[in-house]
Length: 333
Image 1 (tube, rainbow, N blue to C red):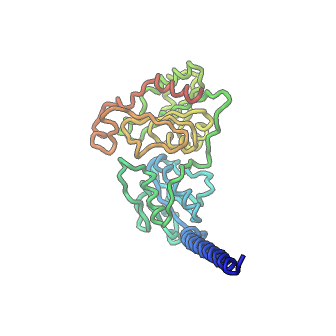
Image 2 (image 1 turned 45 degrees about the vertical axis):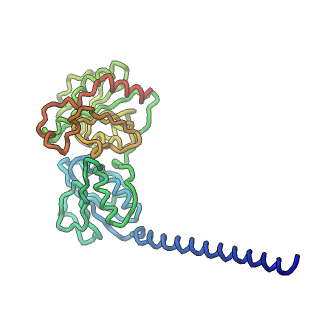
Image 3 (image 1 turned 30 degrees about the vertical axis):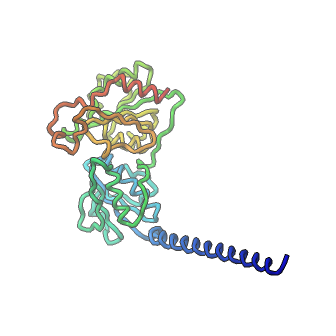
C-alpha cells in the first residue's frame, strides 16, 4: 500500500469522525433547547394555583384532568368548589394531589396564588387571572373546554382520564353477578328527560336471573322505594363519597347521563351509560370500561337546542330491557 492510499483513507476516516461529532453536537443542542423549554414550564415547585369549579358532580369530575396535569407540572393546586350539592367537594376527598378544598371564597387569601382560574362551571371571580375558552360543545367535550386553561399555561398535553377522590373500582367479584343501577334525583324538572323510565323492571329482570342488584338514589327516593323486592339493595346517594364507595364494590354500573355515571367511569368501573336527549360529544363519561348506548331517533340529541326545554316526549330514553340484559350478560359472562 502506498502513502497516497493511506492518506486518503485517513482523510475519509477523519471526515466521518467530524460529521459524527457535528451530528452529536447538534443533537446535544436540540436536547438542551428542549430541556430549557421544559424547565420554563415544569419547574413550578413554589407556584400556587386556585381552580374555581361548580355545578354538578359530573361537571366537577371533569375538572380533575386539569388537576392531574397541573400537579404533574409542579403546581400546588387548591380548589374552590361552589356547587348546589352540599357534598360536591367530596370529589376531592383524600386526594393527595389537591392541597386544600374551599367551599367559601371568604376563607381564601387570593394574594398567595400565581393564578386564580375559572373552569367551565366555576363562578366568575374578581381576582381570577385565567378563564377557560368556550368551545362548540356539539363537537367538543366539557373536559376539552376546561383543558384550554392548561394550554394557556404553556402546557401542551392531552387530558388524562378523570378521577373521583381516591376511590377505584374493586375489580370483578368471584361470582361476577353484582349490578348497580342509578335512579338519581334531579335538581330541576327539565332534567327528568335524562332519566331511564324502566329502572324498576330492569332491576326485577336482573334479580330474577340471579344477579345481585342494587339501586342507588336520593334519600327521599329511597323512602318511597317500598315497591322493590327485598332481594334488591338500596343505596342512598345522600353522601356521594359513601355512595361511590358502595358502587365500586359491584361488577357493573348502569345509569343515565348524570353525575353518578361520571363517577363510576372515573373509578374505572365497567359502565353502561344511556344517552337520549343529552349530547355524547359534550357529556360522555370518560373511562376505559365505558359502553355508551344512545338513541337513534332523528330528534336526538336535542340538548343545546330549543326543543330540549319544550319536549314532553321521552321516547329517546326508551331503551329496551332485553337490550340491556343482553349487554349485562355479555360483560359479566
